[in-house]
Amino acid sequence: MEKQKSVAVVGGGLVGAMNACYLSSRGFKVDLYEARQDIRTMEIVRGRSINLALSCRGRQALKKVGLEDQVVKDGIPMYARMIHDLNGTLRPIPYGKSDQYIMSVDRRKLNETLLTAAEERPDVTLHFQHKLISCDLEKGKLSFKMNGGADVEVTTDLIMGNDGAYSAIRKHMVKRPRFNYSQEYIPHGYMELTVPPHNGEFAMAINYLHIWPRNEYMMIALPNQDKSFTLTLFMPFDMFDQIKTGDDVMRFFMEKFPDSVPLIGEESLKETYFKLPPLPLVSVKCSPYHVSDKAVIMGDAAHAMVPFYGQGMNCGFEDCLVFDEIMEELGNDLSKVLPEFSVVRSPDAHAICDLAMYNYIEMRESVNSRWFLMRKKVDACLHAIMPRVFIPLYTMVSFSRIRYHVVINKAKKQDVLVDNSIQALMALTAVGGGYLAAVAISRHFNINSITDWIHNMADQILK
Ligand code: FAD
Ligand code: EGU
Image 1 (cartoon, helix red, strand yellow):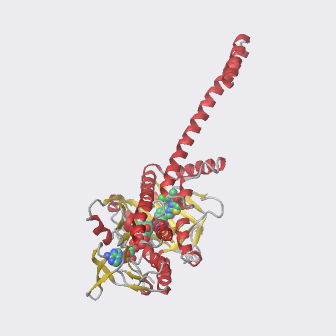
Image 2: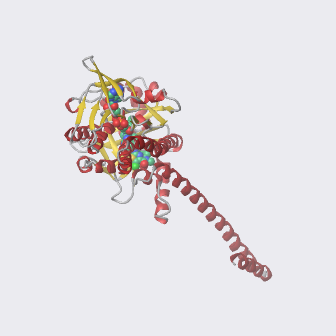
Image 3: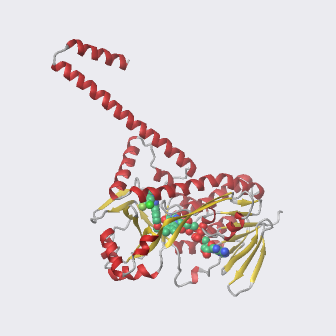
């Protein structure tokens, strides 16, 4: 029998914990190293976004490790967006048919579920408060700083880098020859606020992704199981900086998001706004994702993206699924699987990074609530007319597993098709209108020779 291979998963966030499950199922001896302490034993967990939108790709990945049902039962389905315009009017726009919905899930709970599932599997050991300090990717050597201060040295068959957008593993890859790397901070930051329950009930309609589109400024709210909503305000850093006092906050919110003020509560709004600084948003692209047969990166470590498609986690989960599919196909041979993963996955990750950035630019430049409604209605209308040929971009991204790079190509073709259709329609209207006008004029003046000539011409063209 072959010797059992070992893997060191670096990072116990969403993607690392999922990978521990997948790799255990593939027969690896798994050691997972996480810098923070065990979130399952913590009172409060500081840091990024409280809830996340889980869609098709993420669910497919959870399903294959048998965790979909457990995660989905604690989620809140969102069947539509709810657009809040400036004067407080609410307009719902469904994602599609009633089986096309996304799920609001609690990040912490999801992470805990994944860690516990990993721990229960054969040959999985979780090591908390182990921060990666340095590594030798070719040799499979890692050194961690334990919270107590001692250093721990580890040698492994495979390094699985799942240590997030500021990945330490990736920093080592950047130093290697012919490694491609780019990163971009956008001018916007984000801040989370809370809409508490109102008289023990949800303060807004529950099964929606609430959106306040205001071009430069944007707010989004997702429901939580405790009947609160988490609001995320996206705004340029220099605007955040201009708001210095409680009065500034109130003035800004009353001007841009007036209907949200009574929902958040004046006192709580002023307090929360100054409690934590706004956080940055970074987009990272790199390739390849592997080093020989020894190391590979996935999740935000490989492709951090701006959150304007709700795909970061979904894409990271799909990474785990794609890696597993390649392992299946190539029989666990790491010297083949790792390069194949880079080849297959990087075009798709680059594509969703681009789509998310493109959507950020579009939202910032032109999207107020009227524009948002109009665009989604046009999409729905085109899809109703041509259900096979025209599939809205967000549908392909969030409700299918069509490869992201194929999604871009299809969307481009669809755009050309729609452009051509509009042009053809306009041309037909012009020719048809001209024809009718000419007939009407010649009848009016009773010029039969001209009427005949026009009819002849029309016959010629139609032939
Ligand atoms: P992380 O979740 O960042 O986990 C990395 C882990 O590695 C952490 O636990 C960290 O402590 C650990 N670590 C870091 N460095 C070290 C080290 N040196 N040694 C050991 N451990 C280390 N995605 C969606 O799909 N849907 C959404 O609705 C959505 N909304 C978002 C909203 C916002 C505002 C933001 C910022 C992101 C959103 N995302 C969303 C993206 C999503 O949060 C990320 O894509 C996802 O968390 C990536 O998971 P990860 O495991 O790769 O990284
Ligand atoms: C951003 C931040 C609405 C959670 C993109 C839609 C998002 C999410 C949209 C965040 C938007 C934007 C889509 C989904 C989802 C929409 C989508 C974005 C969840 C194009 C917690 N986006 N997000 N698009 O269509 O496809 O509803 O922080 F406002 S889910 Cl920016 Cl589907």
